[in-house]
Length: 247
Ligand SMILES: [Zn+2]
Ligand SMILES: [Zn+2]
Image (cartoon, rainbow, N blue to C red; front, side):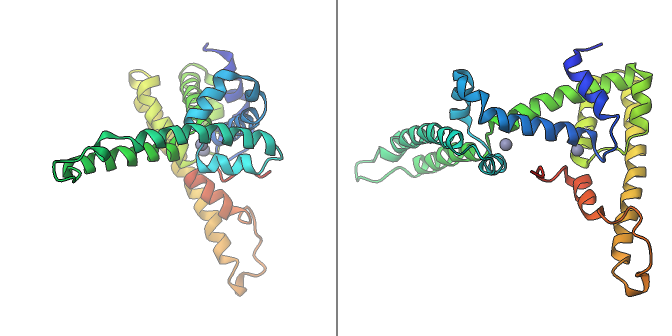
């Protein structure tokens, strides 16, 4: 069996009743990573270096902003901003923006080149995120052990079969992972089982969200809500992954 630090959480989460066990794992990873970034990480120079260089995506800045750790958040921003300003001053002295021809004009090709360089450099500040990297890395391991257990552990396979499927974001992760983590016929068998399960679960979700709309017709006033009441949230989360942590 592969490392238990990954198999145990995957096994445990498949024992809970939820729309996407992988979302549940990701939610916990995200919560822990936010807490670490504003807590224990303060004492870890190696992490601070990476945090200063990469920064965070807007989603994770928002989550950090909502915590009471204002000083820690400010320290993170202060040192990350220093790095960004360093990058900006490097861009300022790009030769393409400073070399001129005999008449004092910038060369046309050089300007285009500089624009690309600046644009790429700024794009990186918007897309790179220490927390996203950490989550993606660990989620890839979870997917790998999930597929390993599906192929080698009958008890887990049954749990997988009786789950409510996954969200479409993690559906894609499982599909992509199947070709790298499974071998031979298992790839085909898994993909078929996954699609069959997901179709059945999406049928269920569709029924719920449809019943939700029917409840708005006065003729259906007395119709019981059944499982439809929280279906808008569950439908969105099934389509795109969980919405923000409710904290
Ligand atoms: Zn999910
Ligand atoms: Zn992020």
